[in-house]
Length: 243
Ligand SMILES: [Zn+2]
Image (cartoon, rainbow, N blue to C red; front, side):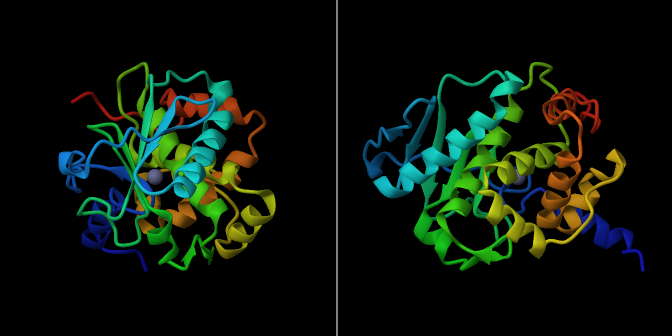
């Protein structure tokens, strides 16, 4: 039975605050770092323009690795990158996100926030498999992808589904192949067979399954990087109108 319009609208509302995902208007913006917490210059990730602050060295190293995986994958796209991409490891994400959120990208402040590894471990499972460092790297890769996708030359915004398609492809690419297959077995599907399926409604029904379907769809493309370029150009998922 088709869901009612009310349920559909509700799902769209929560879709903007789901699993590793951008912070949109529905969620409170993250508070600025507290001055009382003392200066934390963070760790400059080796070889990439990313700085990770918060938590301990082990967490920071994992986050750097996740960011490096994402940036390496996206390199052929030639995206405009900020001078430095700050990643903040936190005990708690901003209020208003889904309860299963483990990271977010705040579009207005351009901040990436990811739970510390100890907090992530409390989930025990993520994407249907036991929590492990490779999944943590993937969370960071997902949010870094959001941050890079937000730096679009057109200045126009992609809808949530476009952003998430991109971020999930980057995230799945960051996973070791055996783990990726394990995750995909937990999220069965055939992949989108029509770009019209890449929409906010489908995403809102089940963000993780949307991510798996995005990866399967992308994996079938003859030229994956060209597909991502066209996606970011708004040729696959229609861009949002200028405000
Ligand atoms: Zn996301």
